[in-house]
Amino acid sequence: MHKNVIALSADKHCALIILPFHKHQTIDGTMEMTHPVICCLNKNILARATCSLPSSSTVTSPAQVPARNATL
Image 1: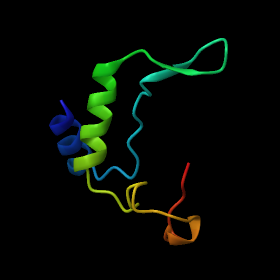
Image 2: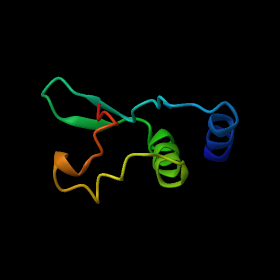
Image 3: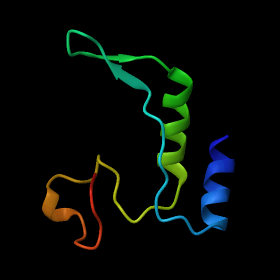
């Protein structure tokens, strides 16, 4: 399914892809994984989609993120 999302976003020249989050906050404040399939989908899209932002593993400080991009 990640291939479909990536292909469609490239065809439509999307500037932003909004993905569902696979974790929810519990009453005690911890995060609980509720959708492992969505987690896998998100990881595949983030690994393969063209993106102007570097992956979080390569960014060590906010100064390394180009000024034209916003981190949400």
